[in-house]
Length: 466
Ligand code: PHE
Image (tube, rainbow, N blue to C red; front, side):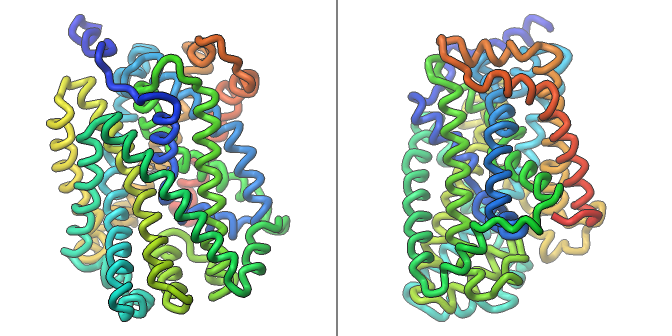
């Protein structure tokens, strides 16, 4: 390493930090809780046998999810560097992994914010619908969503609004921006989801849906259930996006990594499970088992609005729901942006404001193809996919499993698991799941990641169905 590079890779004396464990956990949990919890988990649970899926999910979360998250947070805190330099510091030969970790949020950020823009539009619509109920009926129309996303301008405007809001939070920095926003938005998100779940449970006929959600249906259990749960945890906990390394690098040395990881896992799983209580009973009530088959955007932007239009107090419930989704998406997008900004600050010695403005302009431009891919540019396909689907595929199904897999090899076999376990126990803390951790990182997680890679790639090409 040249002297200059070494200097660039040295932790800066005045690196920002989260104020303490609460600040760190809130920020990391607010990254983890996102669209994955709200639109994907309930759909997967409904699809893969209810209670049995939830059980498998929790088991994988506290073993596999915990091992990868602990690794990332420990690498970050040990090096006090964001991913590009952190990997290099761990082992010079693995420096290129840092660039992969840089590329992933750069690819995800624009399209995630395009979807964030759709959520913003729906939150605004339901806000207006309190005064003009016609909107709720319109939103329930078959072509409302497709007409909106295929329009050239409106989705771009909402995307810009959403992303500018994320940028404002990031510009304020780690404690004053991210930590403060998470400490306000996360409790609100929890309260809103509790209010909605309780309200849904009181609706006549909700019991059937809750039963459908919770009772295990073993006939739907197969290897696919396990693969689906593995992939979901990986995405839902914001792993392999450079985020947990970055946030770990802002963690104070006296904060417990074990306790923090446990709490983030808990938060993420509780919100995911609660999302099931909000969504499954109402979809089941109004459209039966069939209604639960449309996952993702279809469920959120087409099925649910139809139900809000038939429900008592549909405008208000729709508004609360989309505000909740908006908060979840906003804090995830903030964490993506912070990962990029922190790499620019560390590696290129940029000022926070300059880095934020650079990322803002870049993202606004890069989001254009993902936004127009549903309308004007619908004919442009990359390996048969529109822009948004392609960026999602290449990051989630290809780059992220590869990054996480090689990270496990780096820690498990090259620098040794002591690299992480020493960091975890350096305050004399007990590392209860140490053995599980070691076995996971060395043997099981790399195999799981390889399976995720193969399984999700095959599913993107329609060979298997998730
Ligand atoms: N963990 C997020 C979720 O569940 C995924 C995510 C995080 C995506 C951060 C982008 C950025 O939705």
